[in-house]
Image 1 (cartoon, helix red, strand yellow):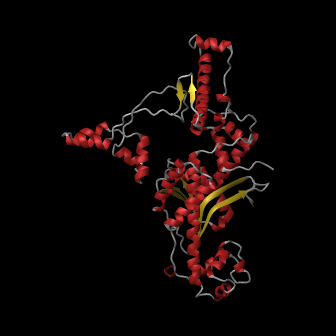
Image 2 (cartoon, rainbow, N blue to C red):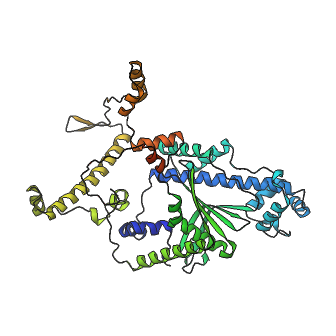
Length: 465
């Protein structure tokens, strides 16, 4: 059985071969992080909502179809209720279609859409609010999440998303969500976990229309948004194009829209591949996948790479990265450092020690905090200092209140505002909370920010800077 690749595994290798080795060969997986949990919960809510809308739209169309088709009326007689029949069909068992001219789900859907006019049924675009909250609760339980901060952030995102999202499907549009796809090395179809699986992936949302158009949607909760042209070149989205078109068949697809829905900001960015662009996207993605797979399989060293991804790398956190392993404690090094860093070699060794000690400090601090939070014991350090959370008073003046008092005393608003600064972090938080975004072009055009430089001592890569 060979290695099965995915976009995420190949992307990890491009970040750092050693990190890839720790994760996929040593089987030391990256620990769960809160932002992953938020994303998983929100993805699940979107998936359940999309399925709800498609299935309920189908039921309403199918109910209207009963008056048009005798075969469908006879099929109905096998069941105690319409709901039982619809659930049987939607459960993909297709028992309801046996012995009928419909033969399979695709033919039934086509017949319904041909016969029933859109004004005869309701197109469901979103679940009602109670159902939507039910899906949120279900997603939290499935993720086994009990962190109040994570749950609160996920709830805020899906609440804003509710007023923006639209999962409606028109006649001759078929929706598929959370599709798992596996492919052999020659890009033939296989099962997701089959022994011959070479490449696999999961696509959030696929809509296929009667005019051979595909819409592939990816839901993200990230704060960084891609531009339209970055979406076009994004290898994850090209992987989706490659997989979905390969599964459906190139002859059955004339154009493909790849779409990212940023749930946090209720913003959508998309690009449509037309004609030869579809072929080029598929070819280039396959070259990327196969090329990286060949490099990985030929790699014997899995050399670590120092870059902007090191700060969040689980190999570093778990002391599995040679770039950040503890340096020698030999008396020679200690003596050289004690002399005040006499040369480049001791400077390098000294800084490595700084990095290792910082990692150890962060790790021990986290463990100590966890212990203190979970115990009723009083921990006294050196007979005097009590180890605990100590709350010290710190004044933070409230902008609104200060401005009100200043205005009462005769100050002008224009003279007051320059004293109130907004950090980039708070600026993004403000947009997220108020539910709007401002493009980078508009920020520059309206002079919404100024750029200043500050020095910070450390060993940084270009990506970190």
